[in-house]
Image (tube, rainbow, N blue to C red; front, side):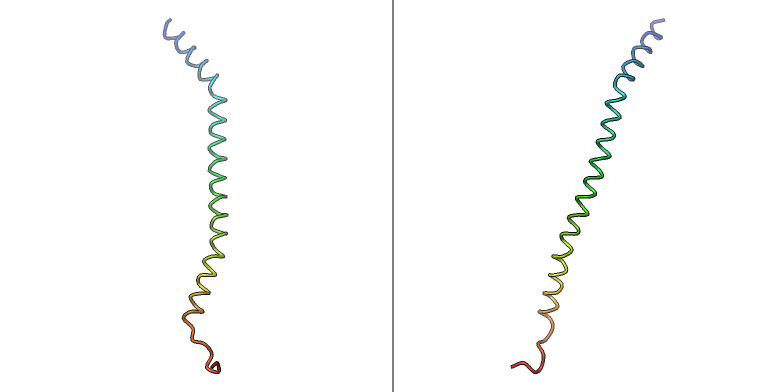
Length: 69
């Protein structure tokens, strides 16, 4: 008898907390999505910098044209 009452109390408590747990899971998914977007934006921003660094290095390595004095 006591076990049945205890089980009912536990189930009621679980039912009461399930909406909060679902919201927390949804927030976790949103956080993961935002982190991914932030990483993509950082990569995009750094791509231009890397391209310019590569261009600068190529410019430094290449000899100037022979006709220049």
